[in-house]
Length: 120
Image (tube, rainbow, N blue to C red):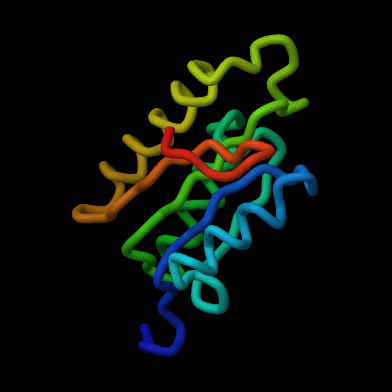
């Protein structure tokens, strides 16, 4: 794979536009804008099957060394089970899968809130 085609990171986030700016700002601070793949899916890591398949494609085609999973508060995809624990459980399941899929990959999980980003 050519160096120009390698992504530094993969970002996984929900489609909810209310958190797009705070997530983009966090990505910019981390130096990810312009050199990372991005998966936007309702509920971020909630739909493990579809999101893990999309992540597999990113790993295969662009070989990122880092993954950033952004969950967010008040997520409609979670319905009534919108607790931080539910988000954490799903994000950690995806994290474990990705760490098993690629040795040495660094996976970070976050919760986007209306006031900023925090580690999950």
